Length: 360
Picture 1 (cartoon, one colour):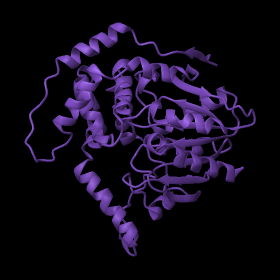
Picture 2: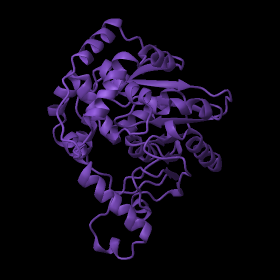
Picture 3: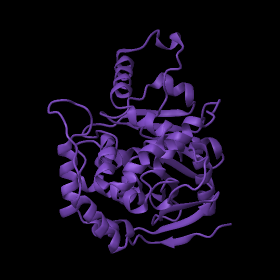
């Protein structure tokens, strides 16, 4: 068994100096006023200016280092994770999984409230951040779920819950599939189930379901280009975003809500930049596009806690793919957007706690 090694983030000052120099030399692109063609020059200029002259990486580094961190090798891949034990030795462990363009930073605000009741394991996805680039093919959702099962076993956890957002909302149900005797429940913020194409699925859609389909249709037509590019040619894009911090920002912030605070956005971007994983993280889409899809639904007890302004999950499609759904809700306002662990921490963590308390 591979050893578990303590880890501390210590970005060399030379890397910060190099970043500052690159930001100072940014060549901004041209745009036509009034045309919605993607992330605006104004937004990128503002973020670049703050990243160069106001943002404090060392403060964010210290915030991350305030929590115990470790690395271990699983299935040939380095895996980085935060491991925060609850003051209650009998607490249920949870493994919390982020997505793209996020990182473990997604869950930092949730650590304190959740660790009162749960032991927390928060890994960086293979190919993301401090887990480093993936070094071989095959790291799709199912393989990551199997790695998470091994990680939890290596930590001595026999029974645990799985929590996820974005890619984590796909990996966490898969963890319930690969380790059903260990996963007591799955809590996610999206259930990515889509129409199969069978006309019968559309026969009696409610107004709410029709509205949800309209949101999905708009998203894929107007903002789905990243998914296509990542799934088809991630390496082509990687050259640009691995070399230009402004280019990296421009690509990432298409999926960072406008109302997110700049420190959250830049800390996620900085992690990709300093670890050299801006390109390797994109491979997850390429891998999943080529992975064999499970033929059977998941059965672990599952809770969905979505929010307005995010992916609109549709229950009839979700129940086709997940037979264990026991809780389905939209978090109350002001919960909004894609990163509720950060922006609506109390609402989301309260729902996580209530769900797992109900299972126990």
